[in-house]
Length: 185
Figure (cartoon, rainbow, N blue to C red):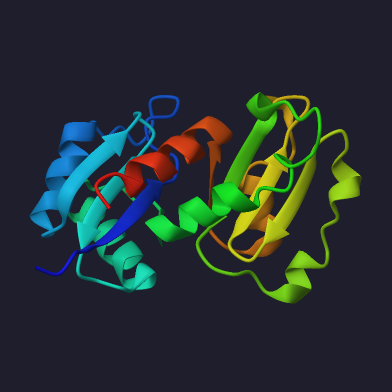
């Protein structure tokens, strides 16, 4: 029997400050109603691991966003990527490779698509010290020395500058999603 593809969907802005409230069992039910298998969630912030025959991240993003709108009447941006991608993100974080990095200050901002090169060129990490970032295609590695709650390098910053949807997870969550997506492979 052919093994299905494992994906991770991360939802932007749910269960934050009493807005876009979605209970995780409801989210699992929605994903299962779409025919996805082995659906599980991690934390209450909209991290969903699932399996499907599909190969298209873009189609999955559109389908899940539409289904959430239809069933819950919520406009929630969704970013989907394969399990191999999140493992690669964990392996490629340039800040982890530096000596004396406080991993509790590390975050990853996932982008819905590769931003236009001209937009990327307009923002420079050294303008936001002590915080720093490194951008690689559809991911931004963040080192927020002052804490994510105080940085200017938040989702809204990257969405405004790059004109793509962005959602951020802390380094611990990214690693846990990678581990969960690789189970049973």
